[in-house]
Amino acid sequence: MQAKLETRPSVRRCAATGALGLALLGAGLPAADAAATAATATPRDAGPGLSRFYDQKIKWSACKGMEMPKDLQCGKVTVPVDYAHPKGGTLDVALARYRATGDSRGSVLLNFGGPGGSGVNELAVGGKEFMHLTNGYDVVTFDPRGVGRSSPVSCGPATLKIMEATDGDEGTGDAEDVLKRLRDAAAECAKYSGPVLPHIGTVDAARDMDVMRRALGDDRLNYLGFSYGTRLGAVYAAQFPDKVGRMVLDGVDTLTEPLTEQGLAGARGQQTALENFLDWCVEDVACPFGQDARSAREQVVRLVASLDSDPVPSAFGEPFTGQDMVGAIGQALYSRELWPSLERALAQLLEDGDTRGLEGFSSGGVTFPVRAPEPAPGRAPEPAPGRAPDQAPGRAPVPEDAGGAGLTDEEDVPMDNLPAALMAINCADDPDRPTAAQVTASLGPLRARYEEASPVFGRYRLTQVLMCYGRPKGTDYVRDDVKDLDTAKMLLVGTRGDPATPYRWTTETADRLGPSAVVLDNHGEGHTGYASSECVHRKVDDFLLYGSLPPDGSSCGSESAGDGSD
Image (cartoon, rainbow, N blue to C red; front, side, top):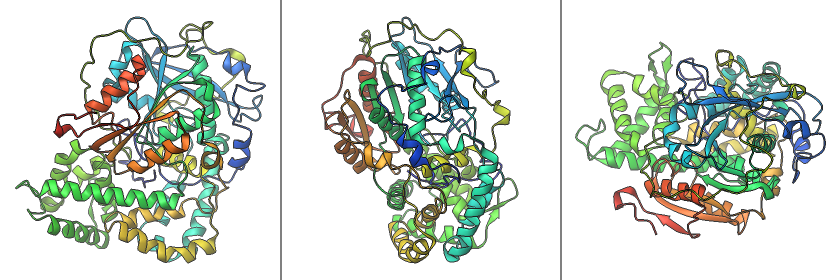
């Protein structure tokens, strides 16, 4: 799912507070063709020349950093930069884990979405959401290749240039100038990113997860992925069907829709979420838009236009535009629990010209809503699908001959790593590359469709159609080959009111994956269900810990309806 990210200094670092839920459509960069790489990166086993990576174990130690929990452990695995040439360069992938309480029956690997967010930072900040899983598992996450401390990519000054080229009226008016600026920016991205860039897509990241699985000592991969993480999990299942353990995909991404259609789905979803928020807001006397829902919607549209034509100073002295406001509102709409904070932030803007409340929602680009889960009934977890009998939980260090570029120090992670990685990964996964003539000819009709989908978010979302222009064609593996899987049963969670990943994507992806996919229908609001629904949380934990899979098509009711699960 695509979104646009802020790049001003206050919000552009990959913050620990957000990595779940969005995928920025971005720039695959001028290097080796990702499709060619993917063609050699889809085996059903480890493949030749990879034994030194599959034989490694992990050396765990306390995570360094003032904000790191004392019981969070960090480590790394070494993987080849190019799986087609495993004797070439290598890179190190950063890991973090919370140990199981008592005896561990294996690991469950988490991906919080993005792509581009640091899993290590996310687990450090939001780890309490997953503590119940430590009843049977080591809870593990990672910074995917190109992200965070794992050989982070960067576009340097070009990140801001890319955003500026596609921002505002000029981004959809002078198409030739925009496309030229995007081509120029791509060359800068290649200069700043290094050898990982041509191999940063989901196909390679999924292969890294199989190396992690073995290094963690697990015969099968137990996995919980959110939003983009569902794409990553589905690709893994297609590559390694016999290695799938207990897999949960929450906030299910599309595997087939082109990026233009994904953008339209996002615009519609966010418009619906905004209208739901305003319906709630006008019931409160403190709502800054008054007590009439239709008038409130009209006021939001006028406010966006007013700020675009006459921005106000941000907390950092830079102009705060209507599109800045749209981006901040979009982040806040990912969780109903944030609605009171959004109401206050909008009131601050309207009454005092104070942008700080809204700017807070843009930190890190994405918000992962967390809440403490209710304790599940007291029973011991059943053993998860097979820990490899010849490997205990990883204790030994990575072998010296595995090499590795080494982890990047936290303070050296580029400021633009989050948007740069989001751009590179999504275009690496996308095979569509319209020509300049096609882009120019389609822009007018497409603009009308986006504005019809959402008078508030349409313009904001439309810029994404330009972002992959001029970049190498991405892999067609995700669209063409991730289907008809012969794996263990997988649980797919779809939320009816999800503004980022519409519910129909859950059922469409389930149909595509085949009989292995079991759907849980969450009648709730917000992006993903695990953090917002006690019912979803319980059913996911029951499956991961005990192997208790809900019937296909069963549901969780809205929280206000008393959890109403079927």
